Length: 298
Image 1 (spheres, helix red, strand yellow):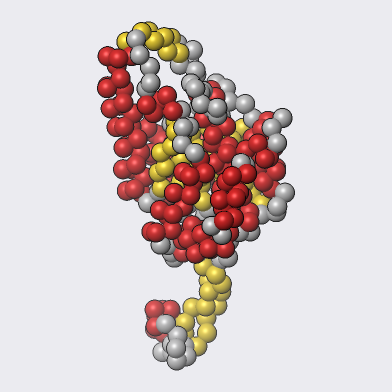
Image 2: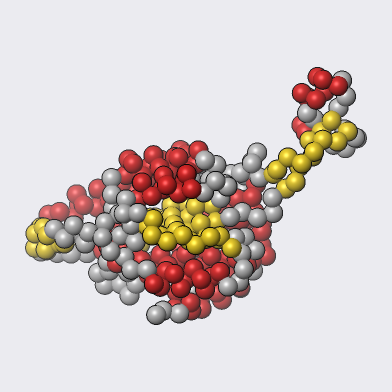
């Protein structure tokens, strides 16, 4: 069985520590941004009223109370200090595919999920895990204890991609199951009809959840490095198709880029994040670049 360190690569830990992500990138950037901007209006819980005093922000005045009492009262809030994250991992058979890379899409996703879980747990933000294929397979409640990273990776190490997937249906179930607003980090190759998936992502957003969609493709799926006549097999249906790779390449790459562009556009319009990755990309660099971009937004 793989060990934690097999997925949480030492070079990623060193890079994170070197940039002091735990203190700066997370607090001031990535997770601090999640605590404020996407959850504006939701990131605090109402506590009580108190009389208005000089120096209070007039925006906090409760005008309904003023109408009833003719006195100024402000709403007092108890701020949330943590955000709860959930790693949502696709276990479909296609996630086990690799053409010439060391890591399958599933292994690559585990590495990325491990790094994100590491960041959250060291920020004392609880993180949980949900795995799915045609239905939800496992659900690990969110915890912020240091042992949680090992629990997450142990469960992922026991999980084996296989069969088909119902991404949209599973996301809808998660939306109805997780009542408290959180950060949904979804890992999938998204080799399904995009329309139902997009509607399910919208449902998560309407529930107040922040969403990061990690679109993980194999390097061969992203670049189509084949030539001549190639016999391709659908890993989920088992169907074979003989194609002329040279004559198909342009149309294939156009279709892939169109699909990714659709996800990117729809995620942007609903306020979700879309991250396109392929297994040839050093996942540590991909994560750091993404965190840098996100920090710049807040």
